[in-house]
Length: 444
Image (cartoon, rainbow, N blue to C red):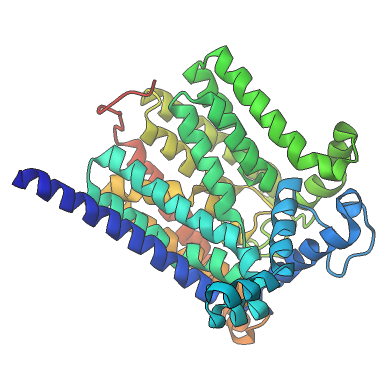
C-alpha cells in the first residue's frame, strides 16, 4: 500500500514539475512579446500581412501589387495563421464584454491586450510550439535513456534556452512551429506511422519550407522502413485534404495553376534572392569570406562557394545515411542524421540566414543529454548560434554591436564561425563512434 502511495506521489510530482516548467516557459515568452518590436522588423511585416488579408481578401492576397513592406512570400498555411491572429485581435472587444459579465479575464490583461495583443498573437504559434518541442524532447530522452532526470533536464534546457526564447518570444519567428511538425514527422516515420508522418511533414513544409533540406534523408528513411501501401495512401490523402483546405481560399478554384505561380514567382525566388555566400549565418563561408558581402559564386581556389557548399552537403548526407543504416535505423541514429544534415546545411550551403541552424536544434539537445560526451560541444554551439541571432537582430539598431563585429576585419564573426564548424565536426565525430540501438523496444 505504501509503495503504491509513493509511486503516485512520484507521478504527481513529475506532472507538477513538467506543468510548472511549461507554464513558466510560456509566461517568460509572453512577458517578452511586447518588447523589441521596432528592432524586429519582421513582426511588423507579419502584422501588415495579417491585416491586409482581411482588407484585400484571400483571392487577391498574394497578387496585390502594393504593400507597405513587402508582398507575402510564405506558404498559404502560415498566411492563414497570421490572418487568424489578426481576426482574434480585431475582435478584442469580446474580452471587455466577458470581463463585465464574469470578471475574467482581469482588467490588466485587457489593457495589455489592447496595446500589444496583435504582436502577442503573431508570436503565439511559435511560443506554443516551443512548449510542444519541450514535451517532445522530454519523451524522446526518456525513451532513449530511461532516465527521468535526464529527460526533464533536457526539456528544461530547451524551454529556458536563450535561443528558443529569443526566436519566439522576442523575434516572433515561427521556426519552432516548423521544427515541431518536422521533428514529429520523422519520429512518426521511424515508428511506422506513415499515415501520420506525411501530414506532419506537409504541415511543416506548408508553414515554411525550411525542412526541405531533409527531403533526401526522409526518402532514404522511407525506403529503409518499407512502409505499408495502405499507410502511404492514407498519408497522401490526408496531406492532400490539408493542401486543399489551406490553398483553396487563395486559389479561386484553380489549385494547380495558383500553386505553380506561387512557388515559381513568390516562394522559391526569395530563397536565393540575396545570392550571398552567407546572408547572416556564422558558418563555413564566413571564416574566409565577409558576411553579407561576398556573393555565392565567390571562389575557393577556383571552386564557386555555392558548388563547394552543395558538394559538402551531399557528403554530409552520404555519411549520415551510412551511419543510420549501420545502426539499423534506431531512433537515436535518425536524430543523429537530422542534426548532421540540418546543421551541415547551415554550415555549408550558401544564402543561409542566421536562423537556419534551428532545424537541428531540438535533435542536438536530445543527443547532448543522451550522449553526455557531446554535451560540451552542444553548449559551445548553443553559445555561438545565440551570438549569431543577437548579432543579426540588433546589428542595425545597436551601432556599438555592429562596430565590434566588423572590427579587425570581422575577427569576432570569423572566430564564432570557426567555433561553429569545429564543434560541429567534433560533435558528429563523437556521435559516429557510438552505438545507438533501440534495445528497449522496436518500432512496429
